[in-house]
Length: 519
Image 1 (cartoon, rainbow, N blue to C red):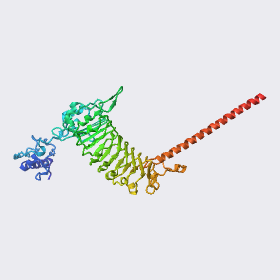
Image 2 (spheres, one colour; image 1 turned 180 degrees about the vertical axis):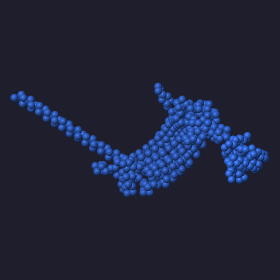
Image 3 (cartoon, rainbow, N blue to C red; image 1 turned 120 degrees about the vertical axis):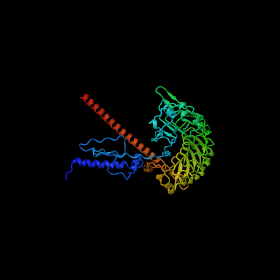
Image 4 (cartoon, rainbow, N blue to C red; image 1 turned 30 degrees about the horizontal axis):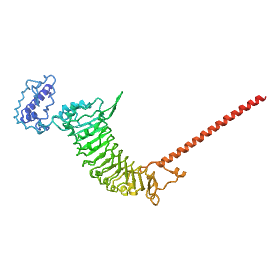
């Protein structure tokens, strides 16, 4: 039986129209299609009624009409009046009760767009300080190496930490900017910011917990035509920050008669670092009880070491090197059982090393070089369980070096050169480990080395962590003497040869004239 193309198309369109009417009449399907909150697809949907695919138009039939309103399934028009059929109108879906608002969308939660928005007054303050801002709308975003740290405030956030570094020359501290930052700021640091120091607001001096000033606020600046010095930081200015737990001041001018003024009200201080400044005066007798770091290196501090240092039971690092501290080493230093690094180098300390140093079981780094410490080195010092580095160079120590095989294996460096009366036991210690020291005789006194050429030529020129290269220096100086002597001999030989040639020429000329006159 022959079937025309028109009949086939009419049959297909009729089937599609019936399937669409059946789907539109199903209330459960219409409800699922209208709400569509779940990703699952209902099993009652016929496979031929895809909501995203329109029927393929048949050649010679009118174009299908678009639905008036969007619907999950549009009725399919037929190409002939006989096959046309009005789709059954879908039944209205029952009204649902509104769901309670989700706690995740509650008004108290900040919207994502304001998650990193800064308070406008503080943003204005940063701009007045010439602070480079990468993204003003997201200044509190956790970028790498960001100088800002913010709180979790809403609707705007506030700064709790600010690090100013390499400030332009035209940047200045203004009272308005500091007032805007004082309400929430807890940590403030300056690095290479040569702006003059001004009076900080009382709210900021009583709320800051960390203050760092490095080569800033008092550093000497040089212009094209003249040299000016900004107003230096004073001890009274620093003392106003009485709530600090960390204070760092380096590479600036500090006008203060001593530490007593600065530390008068800083009872909660944990880390104190004032180094490479003009700070003078004496060390105080009373220190913050919770101090863990004390760095007063390279200043102008004088006087002796107070015995109350032993009360700093939490102290882990103490660096007093590069000052004018004099006097003997107090026994109370041995009470610092938590100290890991102790530096007293380049001062004027004298006297023996206290025997109480045997109690420094946590000590790993000891530097007392460049003083006038005398006496012998306690054996307990080399037997400390944590000791790794010892520098006692350029003192007046004497006696035998207390080193054994176990201490040598444990230590990384034990430098004692520059102590003429100190010697080592050749049977227990190799000479390669103690360059610059003499051997001990049977009585524990240094043996003066002979000045024979063989010993001079056999000395080593290498350096060692256990001493210095003094023997190598002697060898190099001897070599230079030999070299200079050889140069002198060469010059003398050349001069003699030139003199002989000149004398020969004179004799030849004289003979030639004599022969001419005679003839």
